[in-house]
Length: 314
Image 1: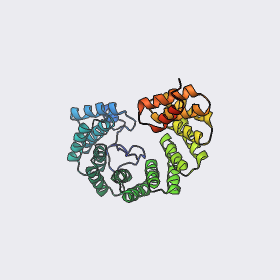
Image 2 (image 1 turned 60 degrees about the vertical axis):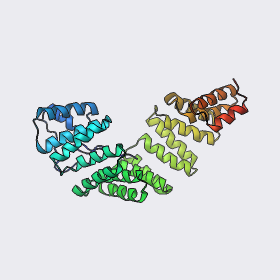
Image 3 (image 1 turned 180 degrees about the vertical axis):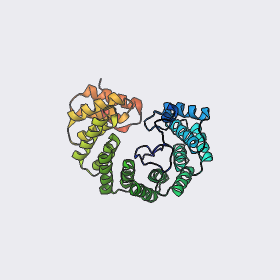
Image 4 (image 1 turned 90 degrees about the horizontal axis):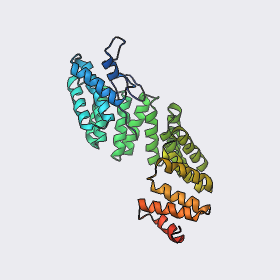
């Protein structure tokens, strides 16, 4: 599941604008523009917002926005305690600032303090009952607490209030997947892909197709993931597994070659590539891959048994 952060100028991802939020204008100081800009990198945002805060040029909601956005940048850098301090200050300066509560909830969620996260999302929703991102994030927290029904309800509200929020469809698709409702999961992932194509959505939909034994569709989705994110091993190794299921050993071998190029620490890719080599008659290559798998996970039964059958071939 994915939880979203919001910025003073607008929400990230869905770009749902907050009412009365301080915006950057053409005549504003460059530091303020970088502090609230949607495309500013986290490190640059922290620097720009620090310049605004230390310059003591802003008060009220704009100063709260600077603290909130610096808290966002620090969260993205995973400096969570510093982020929490900034978001506390943003809320102290403006207790009606729903975005700051949502961002603080996100920090608590990343710290695995889900009760405090939910409390902050509750407050954000109390302030702004149509705040789609807060519903999305609270749904994520309920999922992580194991309450699929509450997660589903919140994610459905996120979609109600912002039907263009692609991440909410992906998150709800995952909840449906957990509830073993393949049809609704596929429908939500398909909508996410239409709104915002990304490798993660294709992998997730591929997983549903795989579990439903629709292997051609699963392979196609994993292939799309590999096209979008060619250096991400997940698309390659997932399609490699499907190809082995389908008896395409050469195709599976090629995919696992790619997967191991980008993630050489994945024990199952070594094991499965060994299986592909074994089927193709390359006993020495298979044995080498099984040994590598056992280096990474000495108790991997399938690799140990396969290597034993090969007599430890070298």
